[in-house]
Image 1 (tube, rainbow, N blue to C red):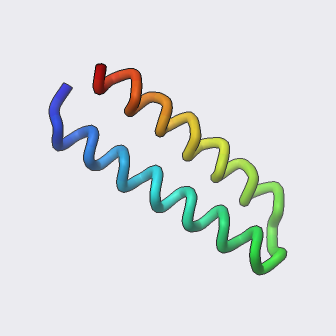
Image 2: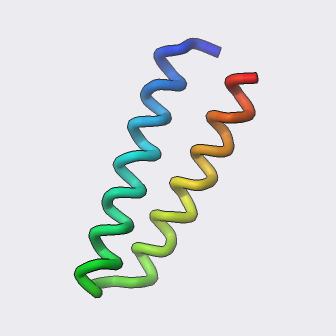
Length: 52
């Protein structure tokens, strides 16, 4: 798989994690924050699998 695509996916992981943590810290929309963190974990797992 292309290194560029994996890099873009990792940027997505960082953006989702940062947004989820921000929402958790501010106490707003906890359900959306949890979903963003789960999506970041899933995307990170995909990056790990595709980079093998």
